[in-house]
Amino acid sequence: MGETPRGPTDEGPLRRWRAVWALLAGAGAGVLVGGPLAVPAGLAAAGVVWVVGGRVEPRVVRLQREEVRRDLPHVVTLLAAALRSGAAPAAGIDIVCRALPGAAAERLGPVAARLQLGADPVVIWTGLAEDPALGPLGRSLARAHRTGAPVVSAVERLADELARRARGEVEDRARAVGVRAAVPLGVCLLPSFLLLGIVPLAASLASTIV
Image (cartoon, rainbow, N blue to C red; front, side):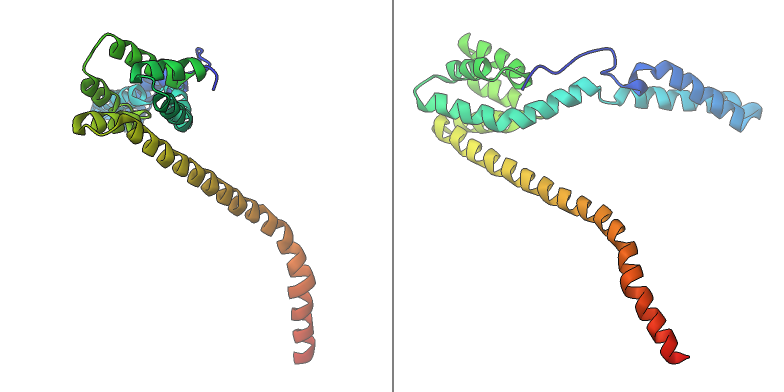
């Protein structure tokens, strides 16, 4: 759970060289269409490439989201333990951020600061519910504050749910590895099966027919 590396290549080639790709696409479309429609076609192609390139998610954003999603079960489990020991939500989040530094801690740090300043917890957790990765935690805590349910119980239930989901994903990946491994194994064994099984059988049948 280290810090996600950042550098000039994090945006990806399409986003980083968006202007160049748009220019090349416009020129190519203009040459391909030709005639009076060359300029409109080139402008349209360049515009499409420019818009699509701008909407491509930067690599660093994707990596951070995946890191937060991967660390969320550990974050929620540790937060549940802190709340169970009597810590307030702001203090519990601060403990989590110091114990598990990373992308999740970077996003939760401002939440703890706002809670310590006395902001409305429902507003804070509702805002966190819109986070693509931390949304489950925000929704659980916002619902607990709105209904008056115990916050500790809500966080513990979420921790159990996330743990089950993480185990299921690990099992799914393990099964997928087995399926992918069976393909090259079958390709390797197929020639031997043909030579040792099918060819002798075919030769035997051919000799009996003759």
